[in-house]
Image 1 (cartoon, rainbow, N blue to C red):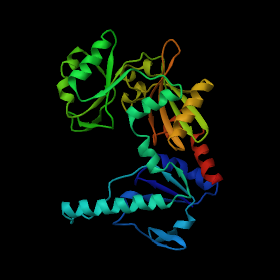
Image 2 (cartoon, one colour):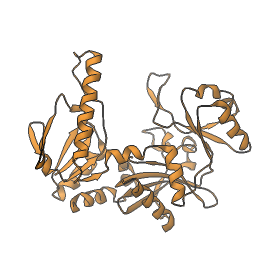
Image 3 (cartoon, rainbow, N blue to C red):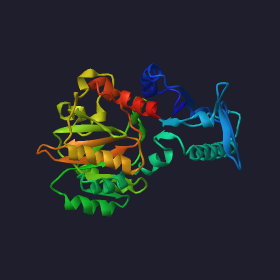
Image 4 (tube, rainbow, N blue to C red):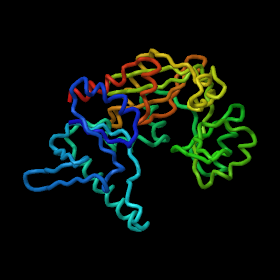
Length: 325
């Protein structure tokens, strides 16, 4: 049995389910937000080992029958509205402790990927240090909440542009009432004068690397899929390819299959493996003179749109990994 841990709505899982069915891989979805209010679980520990089950929508799934876990997405637990805030905090804390213990007991299964490994791999700053060990170039970077420290960094690179990006996804209110994402941002002279604002929200500042193309590299176990994103062909995406107008095909940069040099592909493969991950989505830059730069690794990133745009068989490789197990 493949247990898919995900949100209520996950288009990547929806995209993979038909291939799982075609290959005869039994699977069940576990929406983590349903625990503990709508999903129950239990196990016993004694001298002979561990035995127990998850009960999903009335079906009991024995823990011994789970052979692989696809850990896709988590979500807030949906607790009864009648609970007061203190009880909600207590219930959520205890439920999360239970789930973390359950994951660690499933130590004999194939994880794509283990949540402990995902957490370890989620530091953008640590990734930059580790990537260099595998031969990947990284932009000069400053990570700080100290305005004077950051100004000194700017002064060392006064002839080049500097960008800002957050450690984690940040959503902000837009004038029309919608939510917007804080993308990578080039900092002009006015922004440099506002550095005192960073004191309560430490940021990542990097020398801006000119781009020929951007590369999204998806690693599934030993397989490496590279996609070239022509971000410089669209004004909105020149600083961050994600910043196109969603739903507007005119602002969507071209995506194409790309053949990485073997030493770059191998570095990506080894970087992902070094964290104990079976999957990773890596962002690279290929600059105008042919140098590759590592930007970051998303240990549980999006990939379905890459396959839909280029035909690369990422879904099939994931399913092959599960089928072998």
